Length: 320
Image 1 (spheres, rainbow, N blue to C red):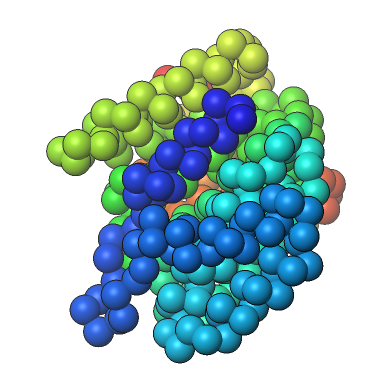
Image 2 (cartoon, helix red, strand yellow):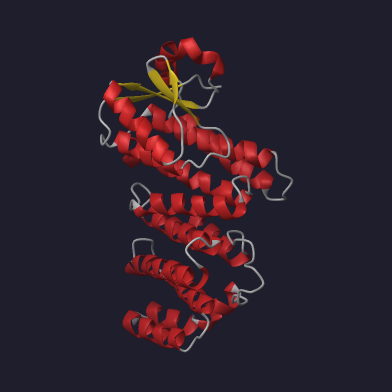
């Protein structure tokens, strides 16, 4: 078993990726260990090549379970068991595990509501397995899963909660994959800005896990610097165009320039998600300050990088 897979399984088993407990009115969830024990027979059937029998046995167990939260816990425990039992990440059991992680997400939504933090945790778990299975180019739903999880956690737990901040690290890691960024400097800097948010937020926290989170984000920054040592290049090319208003622009800012009609359309899209682009000469500026939901910005960056918003060029303000 690869080290990263062992780490993820250990984190799941010890509750490191678990969200805060649900309100008292919600039925008490199964413990992870008990849920795993309950589906051990089904996982063993799958390990012996009897996947159909395993899934039918799981379906019977779920049908006999009245509580919706418990059903979701059992589905997720089965997914965890399949993932652990797969002899390699390329094995078909890994793909089936990803499918069942998806079923668990839907079950949590039905039991707890679409915006419950446990739904976000289930999304992150599934995305992590997908990233392990396809590290160079995970399925695009993994990007969406992290973004949705961040939105849920930001709304329910607060943008500065460590659980919320922790979601930004894999979001940044996905952004800078060559299959995503294609070496675009502005996208790399946007990812670096997410990591800086984690470092700054964790530095202000007294939570025992803050140091570990800050270290993870700092390590991510070092990897970015090692791979993209010249990430300040785009900033230098853009600096001259924003000199008239440079003093009022923060260090973490995206600068958009290009055709007037394209910029107006871009500004309208920002307004539609309740974000504002500030005029700066002939350019528009967006500051990536701590606490801002990066989800809509990531969507727009993806569209620009994919050529869906033509006539717009992304650059950067000076990097501190």
